[in-house]
Image (tube, rainbow, N blue to C red; front, side, top):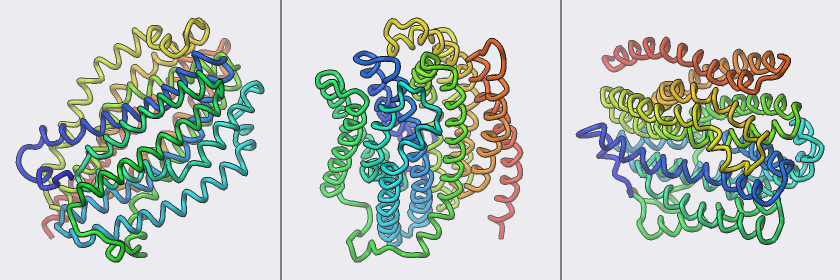
Length: 450
């Protein structure tokens, strides 16, 4: 089990990187879920199936990001407890989280089965892709209990200062997902339904493996059913910390769904091309995303220990490292997009061209997100999730959606111009983060003197 003491004492850069690398690898493997689904469907099916997997995955991601936002409240609260040496309060935090998310999984399952068709129609799914989109959505949301458990386990262990156990779980899940996709989609010819089923089953297996690891290694504090009884005050704190992030993620997810609706209205070829580009972007943005997540846990633990200088230095290291990697990722997205798109689009030149145009805009965003994601992780660690929510909503609804809509009115339509809505939004969010950082730094200095 990870040791939180190493995150609050001694050097900063090496522990931060060691803590981030498993998170990065886990996120890479998680991104591989959707990428493998899309690639296998692209190899063995039609552009309509590719469009269906892209749209269905976006719907699933909309639900998942809400769960991840709420679970961040668990990560932050656990980090604060352990950083402040209050290990006896960690067990009820975990028990409260498990109970709350079990109820949430039931709600998502009901929604997925009752409203799959209306949601797909709302997404303006091309007619030929409607049936497979509904199938993918129903299957994935029916297994939401496993998907939620999968993400919650990662949040809990990051809050404990352990980023390696979630990596093991994700590795197992990815291996089973690849096998499941090849068998169900490639061999059995189940199409999008096979891809969805492979995803759900693989995450179930990963949760089982993770529980076995916990039973073998144990936890760094006393844990039992008696000690882990849910507490309303902890639930209130977790929701207070996590709800702003969940709301932000939900609304930001809606903004991307609106863009997807705009894209879908342009036809199945454009929809498939953007779907390919979105999967590639999931990999391109991995490093800043990983540092954003690791900083949330790293800063939370140090904030609990009142090690504010360490938290601030960790922020700087995260930004600098992300920017260095962005040089490579920006080049690949901007100048090698055609080669990357072929990995998922086969020989369909129209799909490849649309994916390449979309990736050019994200080449710019790789540099901007290196700053913005790390800043948000820093603020989350201190529990300033309301500001993170606010800047995310402003970026999504005041910049991303209006710009993408206006660009869609151009004739001829430019996929590159529509995609430029994302870096435009990130630029505005960076300005907001810079302003708030100066305000927060002064407030923190005064509060520590009290």
